[in-house]
Amino acid sequence: MARASWVLLSSRLPREPSRLRLAVWRRLRRLGAVLLHDAVWVLPADAATREAFEWLAEEIEEQGGTAFIWEAAGLSPEQDRAVIERFRREADARYAEIGGSARAIRDAALRNRRRGSAPAPALRQLRGLERALRLERRRDHFKAPGRAAATVAVSAASADLEQQSAAFPDPRRARALGD
Image (tube, rainbow, N blue to C red; front, side, top):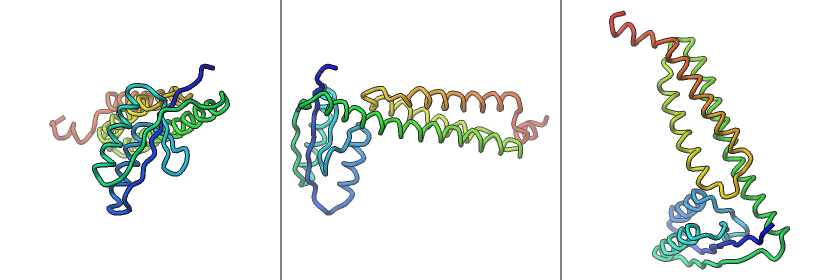
């Protein structure tokens, strides 16, 4: 395994307002960063991740905090593997959540369909999960194994509801159209 190169961000934020801490945490999660210790976050080093951390550090400092960015290499292949595995575990958990949500939306929509409800709201929710899946793919730096299962779950749920929608038109819409 080739030596991994990492970019690290360490920050200290003012206690108040707490929304700054939350905004920084959300941004780090959106980037797919992994928390190593206390306020030390890590991403694989490349131009995009360095730039993302630089922008975030600038925002932190504008809000009265301090931020430091380092580039580092693990001292051993075992350390690199451990960090990579952590990235994959966290991505897998997010993929599992997306896949589970897709199945739950599909199952609820199919139950409601039997009661005469239209699947349109569920299809909109699944479109939102497709966006979440695209975001997750962008921040999945090490191609976690759960990616394929989540993709299949969202696609299958969408296909099932679209098939149900085509096979059984919404009875309320048919009445409204005068059928």
